[in-house]
Length: 351
Length: 129
Image (cartoon, rainbow over all chains, first blue to last red; front, top):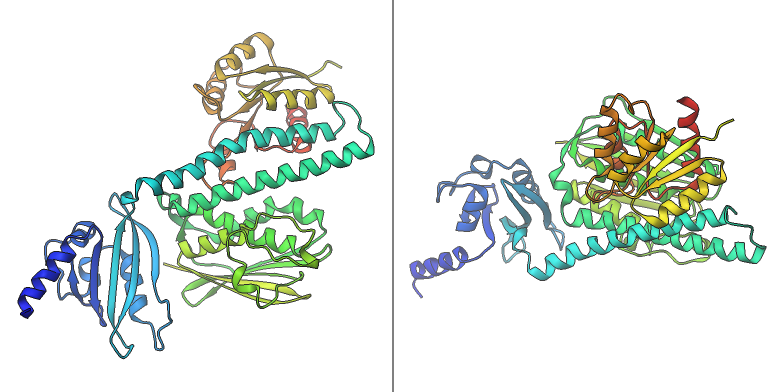
């Protein structure tokens, strides 16, 4: 097929896609895009062709991600892809940016896919909303039941013998576990449905952390844990969602407390590191085996061993932490020594 | 010493039954209203020392009841403890606390409540007022 005809065919094909496509060369110059990309990004016709990506694309986040992909060094990681949710105008888009390699594996450009989330199939929508709906429906009756059980245990409706009280305490613990699970599921839904996108603002991490620490005093005192907090002065503000970041801190500190025996220590340090705010949460807890480390961020994954036998939890805490870090385009790292403790290090980029 | 009277406004019958038992065991008189409208009526007829108000109720929610009461000079001084239920946002955070803070309520406590915490709050508020 002659080159011209092939090119026209290809253009017809990509213009028929319901997703936007945008391709740049290695220097970030736009070399190809389709009609949907024009619509999503507000570009007039082919005006952006041959221009640097930041000239016609107003969205700084997107430009930033494309630049990041183009700066990748050899050897290119096997799965070098950036995915994130963003609102451009009134449209919620899921954006995938991949490096383009030539036959020798060298980076020659980037390709961006813009997917309109409103296009979610009916099934996906029902599935997404359904989980939230079910969780809300379960939350109320469970909360009431928890209260009723607590009150029973208090002896207000009459005294119990030891056996009855013991059994009832177990019932209460189970219900509390379910209530915690539902809270965590709702958190996960919130993040995955991009609910946080509607509430993005400048965040003072120091303030959020301090508030979180206050909230967690009862748990800290219960276990006689010493919590050290060290926050550098004049930390830059980051752009993000307050509720999610709070949930991230809560889950991290909660995790540290849970897996640290009584009288242990947990420390939280925040400092500036290159163009990021660095958050380090360390504990003197039971630690994690190296082979378990990659899995601790998986949903519902819980390390099963002698030392974790009696620790209750939903298995969602760290997956929530990771989702929040990802949503803020940050990075998280774990270092641990069994029997000595664990350190989580998070970097959240400053915009 | 006269018993303090608490008006509990919440549409969840299991919840109100349990809280009533709890507070009565601590020597408070408890009156229950099942929705906002009934709640407002009972403030007039019962003259409570404290109102515990659930946020999530059909028709008139807790925020509206609170706003109405605080706008009325007759009832403004009755302390209101808001039971802030968690919305669809991150549920375990103080996001809900902020919702409570935006009203004129005197205090707030998120559901699910720990009995001990609820009793403590009630005692604190009634001691101050």
